[in-house]
Length: 109
Length: 115
Image (cartoon, rainbow over all chains, first blue to last red; front, top):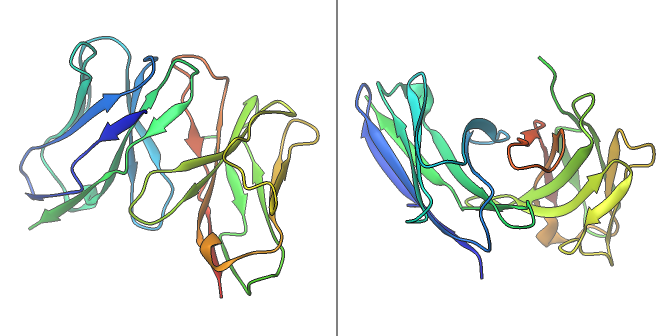
């Protein structure tokens, strides 16, 4: 079967750095996506990785290792508005998105 | 900035009633998706359209759910009759296509409560 694992919940402090991990086992790989979802709202696109390495976009960075089936999302200079769920999703060999259950990130002052 | 439109934003209905959700994708996006999301879980794909054709509806409960995209633009998802277990967020997303880097963009969703 296909599987994406993320921690259920993480807590971090305002101004700090947090790393949210995602491991995947899918039938084929055609890219990995990270989405942010605030409570009661729809997911919004954050980043896309298809090659190994780090992609940086402002305070957010995403890393991919295809050989390890592993990605992480790095959030720097945390702000209270970063409190949200972060969803990892992988495009499989059929170009279907396989979704993780999301990691709820709680930011404390 | 172009956005996916959905309506209604909230819907409360009684079980056994019919409900319908509407979605208007980003202009030029050929692929449209309907997802269902339960609190604490990732989105579950219900149906995927490429233009007006259904590409994947393997997870759509066809005894009560139906979806159409008649002119290959906007789409409607219907539930008849609604059951208590249908209470969830219904999300519509669109993308240019289904290629490797094609990103899905989501509408605001419809929160359905079945009483």
